[in-house]
Length: 131
Image (tube, rainbow, N blue to C red; front, side):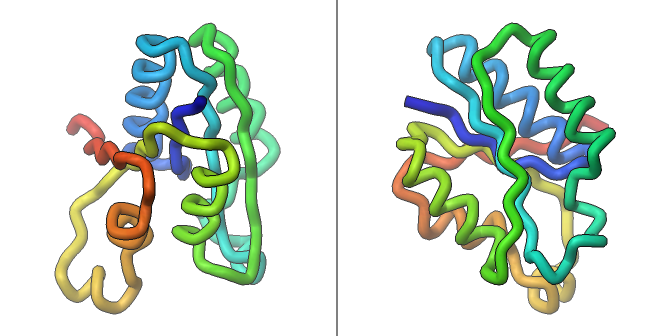
C-alpha cells in the first residue's frame, strides 16, 4: 500500500512532500509522488522541469523512503489524474499542500484540492506551508 503526494514545486508542495515522507516512513509504506498537469499547459509553472525532477528524486533518496515520482500530463483535470493514480496504486492516504486563495480565485480557477477531497476514496491530508 502507498501514500500518495500531489506535488507542485512551491511551498505548499514542499510541505505536502515532507508530510508524505513522514507518513510513509512512520507506516513503512511506499511514497508515490504525482506531479499532474494538463498537456496543453506544458509551460505551466506547476510542471516539474528536468532539474526540479532530479532535485525531488535526490531529496527523496536522502529521506530514505521507498518512492516513485510520476510526472503526468493529460488532457483531463489534474485532480482526476491524482484520483486515478491513487486508485491505481491503492493509496491509503493522499497528501496535498494548500495555500490561501481568495474566494474569487477559487471560483475562477477551480480547486484541484477541493475535487480530490470530495471524490477520493482514501483519506486526504491537507497541509499548509510554514511561514
